[in-house]
Length: 231
Image (cartoon, rainbow, N blue to C red; front, side, top):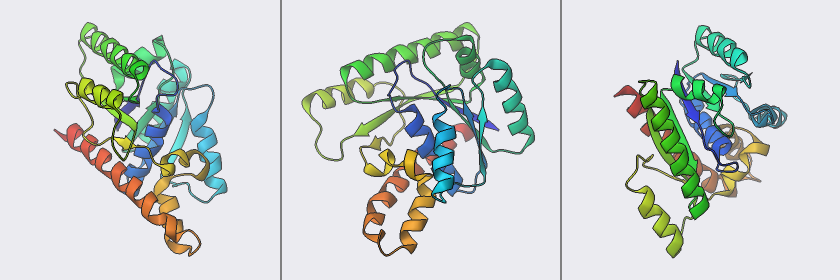
């Protein structure tokens, strides 16, 4: 089982949204996904509840509570024995012993960031912390920044400047653009399931194009990560 962790010092950077999106992309490819929830606010548990209510939860995915190190170790063991292909970790907040263990155990670390000066500063600080920790422990893990809520149209001057700063760092080659389909995932459920339902419902078929574009974008991000992990 490959462990992919979403981590940022800054709250609201898009960790949970990015995780939900990647989960949908991988599940769409028939992968079995374990979701490790280290956030005590339980966003993934609520997501699953909403998804089940909307008939938009993929049964190949499961949420494991992992907000303490013994729980994380136990959950990882269960998932590994359960034959899950990927484990996705929604890491929470500032440095901690739990987060350090998550970073050190990860095969891939994603640092989501929006294109504001504050978000960029926090993303850079997070990346610096990850690199220093891995070097101190003599560990290796793929690490990349995932650009979030990128406008579909023209960037502002400040957003373009942020893009240029990030361009010299390891990046996922495809960003997550600012799309309603991503914002709605927490309430609707898994995007690939929602897209399938829209295709069968004449009342929502006009929205299908936009949700499909979002799913295609996530598929490119998932393919990029899978290819990196295979190399």
